[in-house]
Image 1 (cartoon, rainbow, N blue to C red):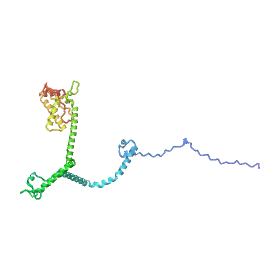
Image 2: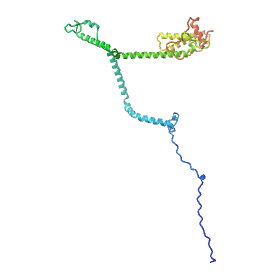
Image 3: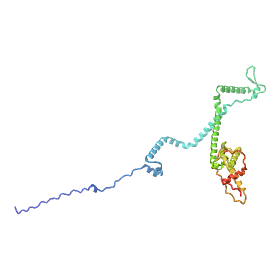
Image 4: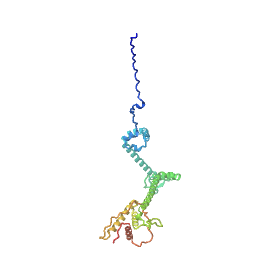
Length: 328
């Protein structure tokens, strides 16, 4: 068997193991992330400017929840309003009619509060005491119903005197209370108005001291020992006009101030037009009038008669203020 040839064994190669990529070699796939919903941004798209009103989304959420709770609470009233809306005019007319009726009843009750029966003092001489009945009887020629009318008045008089003696305040309250309330309200309104006027006057003086009051060497307003300020000629003329208007019945301080300013400006304009024709025309005058005052309390002037006329002092004062040009 030496001649037999031994064939070599053939082997099937084993499959190579699959190549597993290393972690570093793995391909990163982009993650599919969903954008987070932001309530504040969403509402701002619908209502621009909302972001400026709320610090964060939580504050907006809290307010929306509160609004929803209120809407739920007021829902029944909204339904009533929808049913009532078509009848608004009818309700307003009924309400006005009811108020007018109540007012008329109150006025009528007040008028009847002390409304005495008909009475004429001359009736006393037209009746006599009937000796048989002891009651009033008409004199010859007097109306037959005169005794009954006179007795009705006397009975009312006795009843009122008894009521006042027993309870004077309670008896007079219903009739006098409305009148007292009106008087008290008028007094309160007058006092409030007086306080407002006084405050208004003081404010006006303080804001216009630049031309109302005289100044010392340091430029401060000159005060008087008796109170108030020493007025400039312009200020004195202004106070004179206010006092004249008050005496004439103009009591509104704002009206006093406006009219006095116009009168003073008219005097200044008249003095300027009275300058020589060859002199250059001055610039239009505009005083620094500001806010109004109240009861004509515009300060006081010093004692003693001036050595110059009021017109001369006024011209000099306005010249120093640049409001008037002295003739050359």
